Length: 304
Image 1 (tube, rainbow, N blue to C red):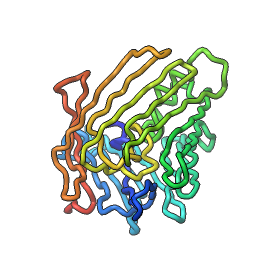
Image 2: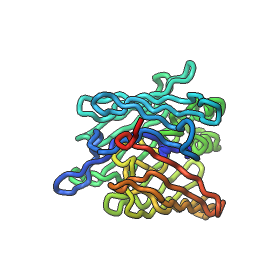
Image 3: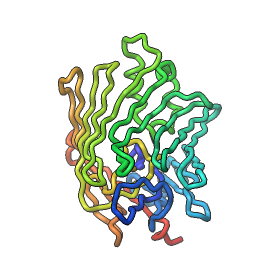
Image 4: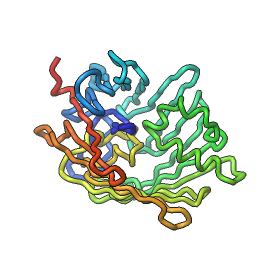
């Protein structure tokens, strides 16, 4: 799957810890017994599609995306990670030719407050995270401000690997950038609804193109291996829910009128003793009967 299931997402993998009083907590450091080592998209034979590298402190340092369609595999993309002293992620970087993409994170009381996306040091997107209160600190709203001129450039799309993997849908922002408006900056909002430790609804609004998207999600008992990864932001805030998604419905509206809806269902066929998935499939109502399979191997279970 493209978005790190992450994936995609993305990719990346330190699991969220719980405090003794069971309040919501974003613990952006590694306390998990399981770290993703390999991901295959279709078959777990041959070269894996995603490879994860950790240092001696078990901190994720690099994710390599491999094009396994070629014999022996070809390295397609590499994402590197830096950390703050408190083990929160400071930045994620991808370099392609003379282009360097970087996502930087700013924290308040160890909670993500701002996220910026830059190209060669120039900020092209800023995300501002709003929380319900200091005790629970769950995200209620995210406001994103885009540099319209940058996203108007269609030629950049093929080189912006980090954006689609970690931030969002480049094509969606390009639709905004080409809208009939004179504004130099564009913005969108995401309103977030939780049920316990899982996000059950994301309501996105794109006023410049009179578009809104409502994503609703339900969950089973299988745990989410991306949980706690603040930098796993794409694919419906994948890193912010404790459980793995069982069903997802995405409805699109223009001027309040529904124009499209798609339902995706996930099935987890193999989970380990601690209820983390090893093999799962997903299918959509647009292509019923067509199943996409993903395999995950964890470092603790991998045998050379």
